[in-house]
Structures are given as structure tokens and as C-alpha cells.
Length: 349
Image (cartoon, rainbow, N blue to C red; front, side, top):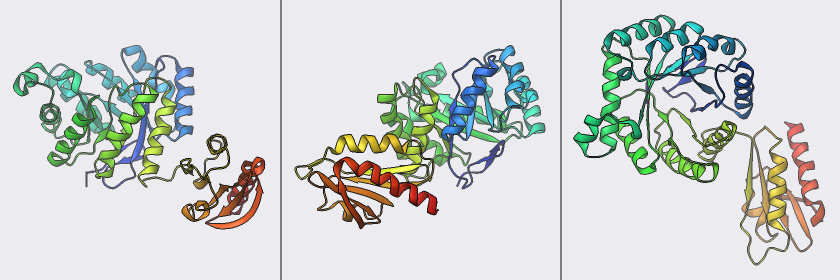
């Protein structure tokens, strides 16, 4: 088990629930736009939000944002230690900062001094695409070992200042490389790990790469917090992340749709019905398992663990709860009758 740190009121590591992160793509100097996006992320189920802090104007505006939200915010900072100090003075909950890239021991010492005083953790983030040239020369290419050695160099700078409020990430766009790096890091240290497949791509390809890579690590018990990195709306990142946790049984998150594949026994328009049900379920926040099955032969039995479901017949279908048939209805009423039962279940709760 990893040691535990706290990012604001969110515990990370040490057996705490795995937290979901995302990052705004607004300008941090644009208070209204950034607040709007943060609120949308939180509504989707985001636990921690990261903001880019590329310059002092962005750093100085953090307080205007922090005061308006309750979710912990992380300042993403590169190279300039003064931005880190200003972000901490503004009230940021955590830093994403590589201590080896901020100009020497004195600057590291200055950042650590404030971080200790304010109880602010630091995430060390190693990316495969930006490894030091000496490590590339040593290993001949980007390897898991090179990524871990890079992280250990940054860790050593913080540990030299007796600072241990640390979280680590080792990201690559290659899924096998990312998995190998995190496995190796997991063996080396007990600091909490932030998972991610960086530059995963668009929604279509990025979801697959992220689900495979992050899902594999989480299934092995590796990882304490993570972000799905997709090109586009970050709200989608949060929804995908929570679906991954739900699929692994690590979190209850909204409805679960169980739908069988079509086969020769299917006599209803199962794809259209399943899509309509999925669309309507998007408005429900409570956990509930809903089944849409293609035939009455196996439907209620195969989906007996579902809270409620429907199974198609020839121009008609069955409505059932926990595998018990309630009634038979015409095909064009299946979705309507299904949601009557869903409403009843949610009201009963």
C-alpha cells in the first residue's frame, strides 16, 4: 500500500478511494470561463482539477478562482519556481512541478519551504517525450527504466530537503511502455502514483488506449489517482474515468447498462432500443443496473442481477425486475414501461 497524501480535502493513496482528475483547457487568466469549466467537471464527477499556470498573470489570478470553488485545484508549473511560490500563496492545493527543472538547489529549497509551511504536496511528472539526453544516451532509447530513473532523480531533490509529500506520474503515449514504467515504479517506492496515458489522442482512439493502459494497472492494484487525457472537452475525460472505475468495481457511478449482442433470435430493433435507453439513462445520477436483452428465451435469466430490464419477443417484450417477469408489453412501449419501473425503483430508494 502506498503512503497517503492530501490534496485539499481529497486523500490520495494509503487505501483511499481512487480519485479522478482532469485539467481545464481555458486560460487561467479568464476567471469566468475557468470557473464554468471547473463546475462542469465537478458535476461530471471530477475529484481534483488541474490548471495551467504558464506565467505570473495566471499565478496571480488563481485566488480569484480558488475562492469560488470547493474542489481541490492543482497548479501545473514548469521551469519557473516563482510561479510555484505565488500559486501556493494564492491558496492552491497542490503543485505539479519537476524540481530538477526549476534552476537549482536554492530554488528547490525555496519552493519546499513554502510547501512545508502550507502542507502542499508536489507531483513529480515524468513524460517519455521529454527525458534528459543523458538518460536517453545511457539507455539507448526511451525505456521504463529511464523513466523511473528520471523520477528518482527528481524525488532525490525533494527528499534531500526532507520533503516527502510527493506523488509521481510516469506517462507515455505508448501503452506497453506506460504499464512497464508504472509497474517498475510501484516496486521501487511507496509514494502514491498518478496514472495516465499522455497524448492518448481523440475521444475515439484515446478512450481505448486509456482504458487498456490505466485499466490494466488499476486491475493490478497499481495507481491511486488518474486522468484520462483526451483531445477536446475535458468533461468527457471525467465520464470515461468514472466508467473505468465502475467497470472494475472500484466505484459506484451512475447507471450501468447491460445489453446483449444481436443474434438470429432477436425479433425487435435492439440497437435502436438500447441506444434510446442509454440516452435516457444519461439523465440519471444514481447507481442502477438496467438490462436491454434481445430475446425472451434467455433475457430475464441472463440479466437476473440487473435491477430492472426488458427482453424482446416478436413485436412485444417482457419487463422484469431481478429476473422476475412483471408484465408483457408491445414493442413500441418497452422503453416507456422500462422507465416507469426505473422511476419506481428510484422513488422506493
